[in-house]
Length: 70
Image (tube, rainbow, N blue to C red; front, side):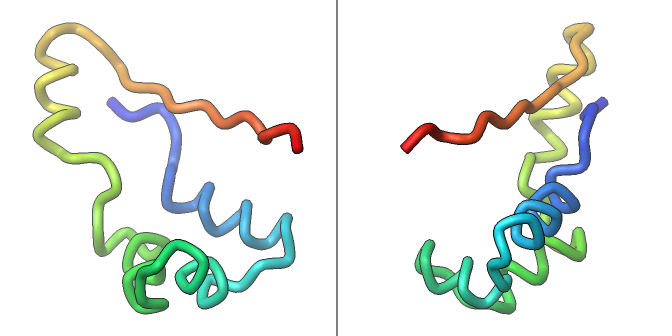
């Protein structure tokens, strides 16, 4: 089981940093519609196959974020 909601985290981090999804897309070289697909969970960031394999091996997957120090 994935222990967090990556898609929602992207949306919240954009809000926290006053960055639009379109601007984020521009910065990382993808289309705004692709970023929107991720945020709306129509495109999975983490492979369902990877999660199934880890679950079968007895693991839950957790992802943590740390703000980079500039």
